[in-house]
Amino acid sequence: MLILGGTHEARRLATKLALDARYEPLLSYAGRTENPELPGDVACRVGGFGGAEALGVFLARFDALIDATHPFAAQISANAVVAARAADVPLLRLVRPAWPREDTWVEVASMRAAAQALGDAPKRVFLTIGRLEVGAFKHAPQHHYVVRAVDAFEPDLPDAKVIAARGPFRLDDERALLERERIDVLVSKNAGTPATYDKLRAARERKLPVIMVARPVLPDAPEVATVEEAEAWLRHGSERGE
Ligand code: NAP
Image (cartoon, rainbow, N blue to C red; front, top):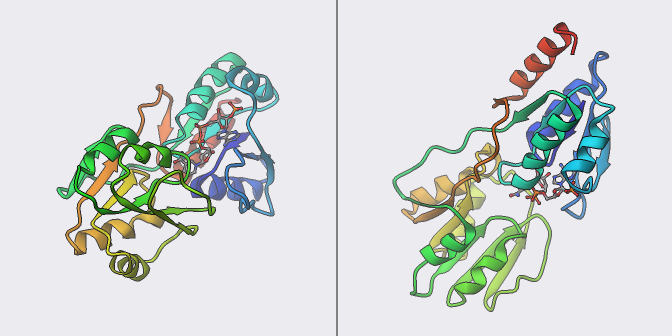
């Protein structure tokens, strides 16, 4: 099976399946980070396929497709639906549940809306949205930004500091960061992962507002929330002779 990855769940599923003689997983990465932590014991490939149609062609030699990409990776998830249909290969989406809403959150639908929600008065903002969409905050140049991303980069913002770090992040470190950087407000995507949840705990302790970007809406596909459910789906597929 082909596993579209970039998440902890994708890696864990691929590693488990690679140990099982019935399966031959190939784990696919987009290649966004400079040093992806490729699991040594699983076959991996890196890089885009060249669109939905090309993914469909690539998929022809597989028995199943598992889309275990990040909940905000909307393009590849849409491509997976189109490609699976074209190749007539069963598709399963493995996506962790969103974090439940809290009353200190302002929920917004886009990065642009998140930038607007910061308001006019200058603030010290902790941006935990990755590197790719930081440009949306150019429209709110009055703020000081502390940007955390896996790789160091030069944000196109007038007043920003980058912290290059890969999760998981511990509660004590998150508390210390909010204190040290004198953060007024946190901006996050609703990733749903425990690995990055403690920033929200630390923010709640300090009664800081959180601007939470809601997940993009994806085209319908059969969906599970855990690696174990994905394994069960694959087992049932084998029993059905797929
Ligand atoms: P995206 O906008 O949905 O995808 C853009 C293009 O990147 C896709 O059309 C595809 O190129 C390629 N691509 C994406 N995931 C791929 C994969 N697993 N294997 C091969 N090609 C892939 O995705 P994104 O938001 O840039 O995210 C890229 C990757 O980073 C995803 O795998 C995701 O799981 C991971 N990630 C994303 C986020 C996030 O917040 N977006 C956070 C953490 C990790 P082609 O059309 O050429 O095939």
